[in-house]
Length: 351
Image 1 (cartoon, rainbow, N blue to C red):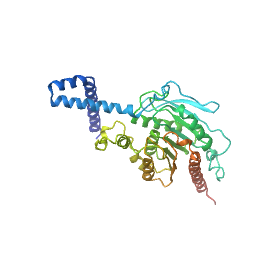
Image 2 (tube, rainbow, N blue to C red):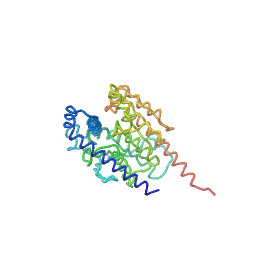
Image 3 (tube, one colour):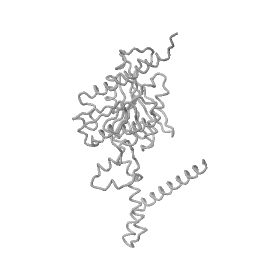
Image 4 (cartoon, one colour):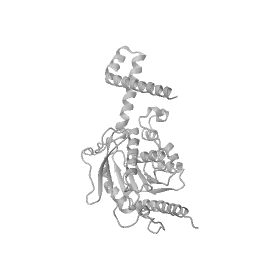
């Protein structure tokens, strides 16, 4: 069975290479094809023009989704926190791409919310949770430091920010599968750190980062304690239908999309505690998508936090935002502490 699979994989790669080469050739000669068709006509020339246009649009999808150069200095300068314990780290993904991470350390004396009154012993019980922060489709991790510092202070948690490939000081070019590998590498790195509690890893994602979080959580249910997603979408095809409502986008087959991010399918696999944060004044992603993701979630512990004045990027500045996150984390850690207590008592035999 292994040989036919390998053969099919080789055939598939050859076909993709041929299609890519054909699109490239047609794109280069598009003007000549149009002029020739105008002079002589012909079905084959028309087909080549359509293939060329389709290829250009397919390749152009990345430019419509990823904005690593906005603002213009985003690839040159990544602001770092001052006066706060932090580490600037570089890791490599499974496909060899170098990523830049910033680890903000919580060093406060207080226990994390929900743990202080727990009847649990051991250093792991009072260890702070670690939040993996996945940002949106523009800028770099330095632009999210003010938001991350407020998370650190209010949630009493470590915060790990990661720049996707092609963003900030990370190498490579952004793409859906690449972002999934970046997220996986970030989680793997946190799991290798002996100074971080592996049982309290929380994923946070805003906008595009929310789609990355949902995918990562769906494939790592036993390594993720909870997820928090904010102002994210159902999928890229859903967003295309919303943004280009004047075109029959619903009729396009899924394979026409270079990036899909099918969160509405993957959220069905996320049974861990989940918080969905929605700004109702979001002008980019319809807030109804957040409500739909919340309703699709199979988690027994799920919350929907709604902020009427919250915009796409600034919901975190709304009054009560961090209180909602703190309450969610508090409930999570209380449940975690209770489970540890039950496991400890269950392991003791009284004679």
